[in-house]
Length: 193
Image (cartoon, rainbow, N blue to C red; front, top):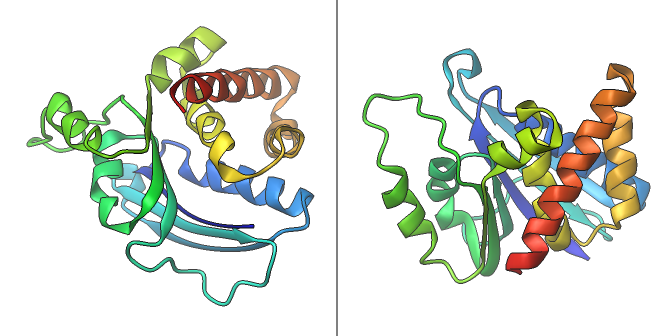
């Protein structure tokens, strides 16, 4: 088993929480893990990305070569579009359809989505609405994470354990909201797979 994953979004959207969940779940399954992060000016809504590689064998490098990402997991559609050159030919894009408009000349969302929809393997979800329906719009990143789980090759039990581990110190309500959000994202992805 080997997965090369690009996580993309804007500072404050929870990209590093997704990376932590994938990392915890991978370690639960005794997988090897390498991660490299690039933090933008997060307090100003800068781009944040993370290269995450998981494998049943040792991993030499933490960076993913262009055209070799099995997954692009994005909590913002323009950031998904930005990393298309990284995607392998048979790779999948999992993205929220909710834009984070942080620049004056942000393109029309419909234009961005039209470009993304040209890809053969894509899951698009209204993560903000699903998260709100689950109890807290702040869990939109866990909706996107949940939507990525059918493509990660990780057991759902490991994923749920990872969420509990990451959010456990914030109380049972926070854990349950994030578990509910991840399950809802998972169900949306299965419908589109």
